Length: 212
Ligand code: B1M
Image (tube, rainbow, N blue to C red; front, side, top):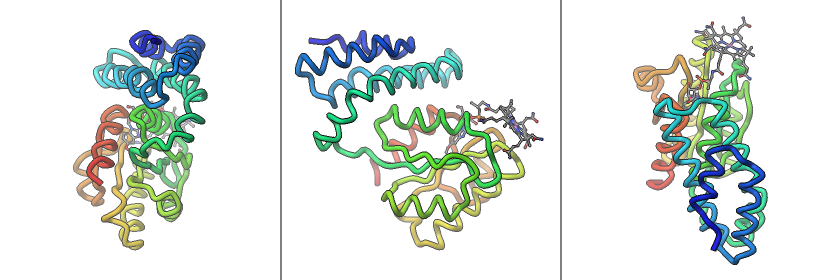
């Protein structure tokens, strides 16, 4: 039986080629795609998430681990789609209108994928109406907004308003974050959650989806 501990370790070290090979070996040995995802890839990504939160690893290590995760996912994706894997939840993510910073947003998206959530990335400079349209189109549980500028963070309040105007507040939770954002700002704009880093954002997103 393929070694899931080794798979998790290769992922943490960002060894994309080895990850791909081990995933293929596991599939060939008859292991289920969901099992490989949970015990190998997601297990490794969870450890990276924890280490990132504790400043034991930094942005470059997370990016290479995510690249290795994607290499493994290339093999698993068609199998997961064919096997009706339970959807753990859907997140529509983007950087708010007027803001082009996307490094933090990308990390948040990667960590959320690492929790097994479906992530729809709208990119940067996303107007409030687009967040809502995509949340409806994809039956999302969460709209996740990132902002890096004090001049653009107010757009998060407009996203909350747009969600309320569409009468979606009971179905879609708004998560916010980014360097200038705080818990007190979250309370001011009425968002559902503020998290300070990507790993915590992914943990909270999974909790929200579980309780939806
Ligand atoms: Co810009 N920039 N920038 N910039 N830039 C900052 C943010 C700034 C603090 C630099 C400074 O002056 N010291 C400053 C903002 C000042 C302010 O508003 N208070 C600034 C400025 C002023 C600008 C321009 C206006 C500069 C100009 O043109 N005059 C301009 C604005 C363009 C625009 O957006 N319209 C601009 C442009 C750029 C670049 C394009 C050159 C580039 C962005 C490239 C890119 O993203 N593709 C850039 C960069 C790289 C930065 C700095 C240097 C780094 C940002 C970054 O990626 N950090 C930044 C200074 C700094 O932070 N040291 C700066 C790493 C990243 C991992 O952290 O995004 O905070 P961060 O994400 C964290 C958490 O915040 C959290 O998780 C991540 C990690 O765990 N998080 C979330 C993020 N989103 C979350 C969402 C969540 C939860 C957590 O829930 C949904």
